[in-house]
Length: 375
Ligand code: PLP
Image (tube, rainbow, N blue to C red; front, side):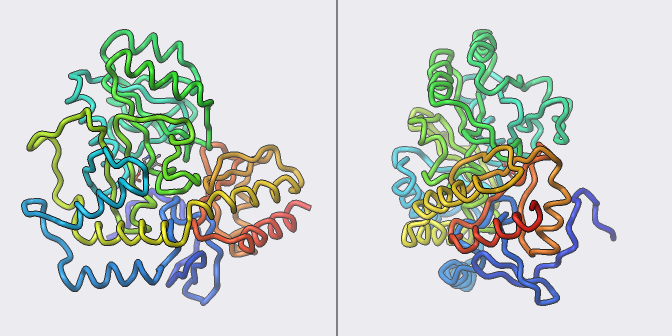
C-alpha cells in the first residue's frame, strides 16, 4: 500500500534524537529548531520523560475512562498550579484539532448558539469548523466551515461587535500569537476589548494555546501577557513532548454534566504520565525563564543579520521575515548546515520553534549559518 501523499517531505530520515539534536540514518547530526511543529518542549528523549513513560507502560498503558484514573486528577492539580489556572476544570483528548472541536462543541452547548468567529490567518487544526483561512491561504476552509465561521481581521473590534450583535455566535476562537498564519499579534487593548465583547454578548472566548501554550512564550500561556481569563483554553503539542495528547481547560462558570463530552483514548494513563513529566521538567529546569532569556538573545542577534525585513513573534515562537521567498534558504539550512527550521503561510518567513531547552550556543549556530548564506 502506498502512503496518501499529502506532506512535502525533506529527504532526511531521523533515527534517534537527544535534546535539541536529531541524528539521521547516515549518522549525520541536525540541530532541531523546529521541534516537529512546536511539539518538542523539554527536548528530545529527556531521561525523566523516557523513564516516566517506560515505567507507566510497564504498569498500565491504557484503560478507558470508565474507571477512575488518579493520574488525571494529579495532572489537573499540577497543571492548574503551574499555569496559574487552578480554578479551571480539565478535559483531556488526543490532539489540537480535537481540543478545539471539543471547545467549540462545549461553547455551543453552553449558550445554545452555533456560529463561530475566527480571525484571518489563524489556524485551529484540520476540523470541519476550526480551520480559518483567508482566500489566498494554502489552508482552505472546507465548505461547511465557510457557512458557520465568520473570518475577521485581527484587531477589528467593530466588525467583531457587528457580528456578535446578531446573537448567533457561540464562540470566538483566537490564538494570542498566531502560529502557522505567520506570528501575527494584536495589542492588549484589542484582546481585552474582545474579552469584554464576548462577555457583553454571551459568547464563549476560546484561547487556542495549542502551539503557544506550555511555556513557549515565556509565560505558561500566551494570553497571560494580556491579563485575560478565557472561558476555554485549548492545549496540545508541547503538552506531551511528542506523545499525542491534548485537552481543554474550562472556566468554573461552565458546568459539566455526564455525557456532555467524551473520548476513548483521551487522558489515558500514558498520556498523563508523559504530560506530568513535561510539567515536572518545565518547572525543575526553569524552562519558561529559559524561553524568555533565549528569546531576548535571539532577537539581539537577529538585528545584526543582513537582508532581514522583520523579527516576529515572542518567546520561542519566533520568525525571521525577509523580502524574498525563503524556501531555498531553508534547504541550505537543512542540507548544508544541518539545521531544521519551519515555514509559514507567508513564503518570506522562517519560523523558529525550538525545544525550550535550547541554549545560546545553538542560536549562534543558526546565525553563523544564516550569515554564510546571506553575505
Ligand atoms: N491550533 C493551533 C494553533 C495549531 O497550531 C495547530 C497545529 O498546528 C492545531 C490547533 C491543530 O493541532 P493538531 O495538529 O494536533 O490537530
